[in-house]
Image: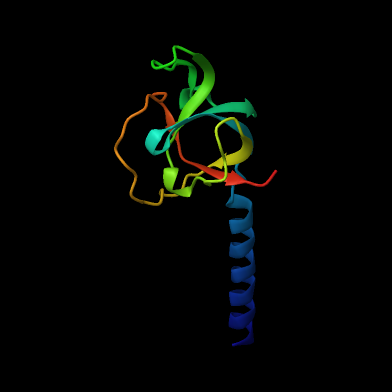
Length: 124
């Protein structure tokens, strides 16, 4: 009986230690809210950090202003984006791989880059 308890305790320790090693720490990026379009049609530019260029638009032109932007993406998680961040503000974020929270967002349109990312704003 004591051997069974000892083996059970040892198994729990080994399995819990392997879980700690499997958790991947998300890379932190710095971004700038370039365009705060109507109805959370937000365009964010990466200002610090190396990201897979397949996840963002390397070059995109706003068809309203004809202004060109580099390394931008459309905000894919508007429900979690802080209302305190205004156009021109810089902030830190991680890519959020969890299922995005659903909320009501109006359907008015403002042009955004074709690629979007779900992000979570974090402290510096």
